Length: 298
Ligand SMILES: [Zn+2]
Image 1 (tube, rainbow, N blue to C red):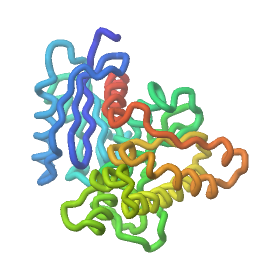
Image 2 (image 1 turned 90 degrees about the vertical axis):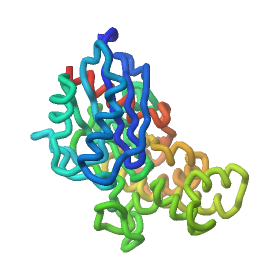
Image 3 (image 1 turned 180 degrees about the horizontal axis):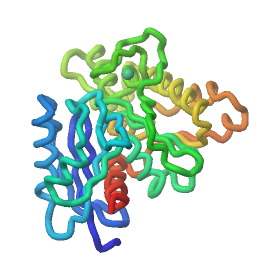
């Protein structure tokens, strides 16, 4: 099996990350392109264009991680929050185009799979992964198995009647509305005007800027509330925080997040045992997870 390689595609709201991956989960070659969000047709061409340069001799399967709710009975992506992809059998489409089997899963679910098998979640029986990127995704390992059902953990309410959520979501005060990279972009713009970004916010915090530190601590506070809530639902002993923004800002988010999450967790023994850690595979967790998924499709 390890002699074979697959192509994994981590489809984000901002960029498409495609990689050639071996049976050990090693990324051998990669392509990164901006996500075309103008229309579904443009998006599909963007995905195919990211895959094409990696297709050579010996690609055995394709794996896709997409920010969407998947209907596993039909393999269709039912709807997505931050990209134009709706009611589409992406796997079947790409399988026909490239002539190899293809598997599709929610992007945060595959990131959780990668961290569970190869990263910070090794050996965990109950764990949750939160990816803080363009949006906020959630993946869950429950009783020693990857949960493949609906787990839109980014859309738990952390501020009742709070700021409106983004994309197609009609909710408000969701974790995604306050703790995503986009939410951090908006917070940075509030401080420093148009064009300021989450990256600038984290950069200024690293230099000790008091306003930046306060904003990130506030985001950490709400992240902690979200973590406490999902831990109370799933009984997880481990929460892994990943995604581009989550990883970049972890050191500024965690102190407050850990304190609030511990406070919210209902059972004393869980409170003491709860660990909140950064994704060990970094922002490659999703990509590596799509590789593992593709091997499952063989
Ligand atoms: Zn939402």
